[in-house]
Length: 440
Image 1 (cartoon, one colour):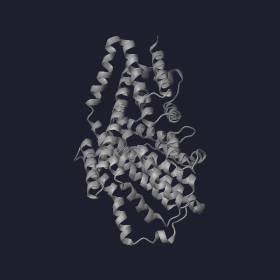
Image 2 (cartoon, rainbow, N blue to C red; image 1 turned 60 degrees about the horizontal axis):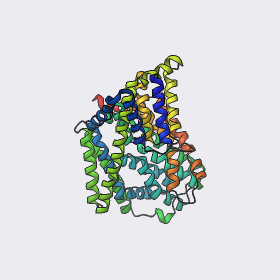
Image 3 (spheres, helix red, strand yellow; image 1 turned 90 degrees about the vertical axis):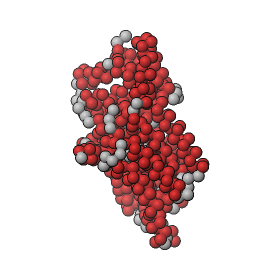
Image 4 (spheres, rainbow, N blue to C red; image 1 turned 30 degrees about the horizontal axis):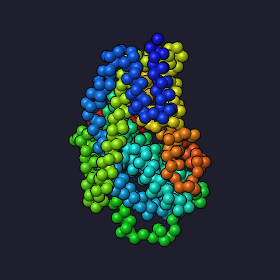
């Protein structure tokens, strides 16, 4: 059987297993193991062992549990509640101010956690009930929560970009820096949409009543200080790293320790908070490590088959497609897969194919990592089966139905597509910051 057909059979078998509801790492790892042993006999059993050794030796992987632990400490200790109270008292006299503040909350939560699920959970449990109680339009605020939570996989410390760095063999620090400007740009587009729409239709985002706005200045200042805590934690972690004083792993340890100390100082580090944070960190870290292990094994088999070169020859030689057309087709495939897979599954399935192909086409892999992440955000919110849509349905109150959730996302998806186009046309939006920092 030609190697191209074997590669196609591997890919289709993996997709079939995923569609039957198998765990991601199990589907990918099983296909890789069976293919390796079938093709190379007992020698193929060395592939998972070699992948495990490669994973254990990848020093930056230590950042993964550190950042997850930091995020859960800040989330479980209710510091995110203080953030929303800050936006509540400072933005309440602006039309749509609480919705704008919710985007700000999501950006800060993203900088604390790096996972979109955490942002969705905090937004749906803290912000959404308050917005609905104050007569904000339910469709608009549902879209706000979903769009804001998607920033978690782009704004550093993004866990997804750590996984991409592992698979693409790119520096994690550069990828994080590359995500900052596009992430803030997308947040700015969301805020601009909310502000303009609430200016044209004030009933969608009414201001708070005079009684609610009448908060003593001392309380406003106290809440402002609470709101700056995540920024200070982020600065304590990133400033030494950017200036070259600490390594990435050391900076992640500083972030985790700083978050822990803040929770202790504020009197919120209870036994339950600590135990929950440790359990969740262990569960998520192990899940990601199993997925990476399976992906490395799958990629090793694909490399051995020469599947990447065969696909490159198909696109550039037989079909005669130019590099930009191939790149756009890749992004469209992410949107299609995003209707039934999460970001991690998409990454480990196609990265062994796409990353070498993107490199051979002459594109920057740091820039492509940002493109992948933005496209994943769009896929999360694209009907009918976007990941965030069903996550919102599970967390939203009964008065918000699937029709509301579907219709809420379109303005934000348009803004995200616009942001994606800007980053594609002007790569320096993503590359300027890492190039400037690392040039020093």
